[in-house]
Length: 301
Ligand code: AMP
Image (cartoon, rainbow, N blue to C red):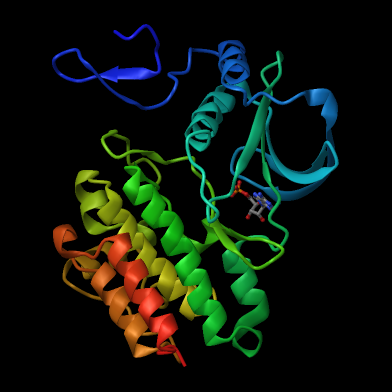
């Protein structure tokens, strides 16, 4: 091996490419790992100011780090911290203007974990869309959000990362109205196997539900649902269809109607994302190209 745990081996035992530092077991070991990679922050310099959100496993707080407003995900429980250490370690490898940027991590000896990210002043995209609605948000805004997310996803596609939980609730909006993809909790390198314990059924592609086949193309399916959320100003997908009927109907080829006022060119992209055969679905690269064309030609008006 090449002397470092940062390398992976192919079938012949040869070094192939840099993937990610393999985290040692336990939060103390993780602290060492983050210190060595330069991602550990100093707890004394972080002021926690107020709670701004409740995640599944801990509070999200607004804080101040060296005079900068930051968001802090606080995880008190040691077992849960382990899962979030994985989330943070994924985030250390990714950098793009449309991904919520990790600033650093604090692992305390008592087992608490703080994940510090850039502060996204306008909150989650789904709440943003619902609270502003169509009277405030024009077609140019909706297309810009769609493009922002698509660019982040094209970056993940190029880097072989699969998000697996892409939805408007996991996109945040910055003070200057840039949409950024967040919540890398489930993000794995494309080859990883995972369990399908708690799937957001309405956002997950049929092959991912059926055979746990998560891929960039299953993210493309979710992106189609996210486009529908954007153009319906944050409605819950598959309105009026009971949850247990969604999968069987989708597998038979059912597709949601276009949201009111949605430009036909954008609805056409949604339907392409919902192609049952994952191979035939467009790539994020293709989607970004088409969205840019729609913007340049003002086909969204
Ligand atoms: P999460 O646990 O990541 O789903 O976050 C729960 C809620 O906390 C989100 O819906 C947001 O309202 C808020 N939140 C999370 N991260 C940030 C951030 N970086 N900036 C501002 N608010 C955030």
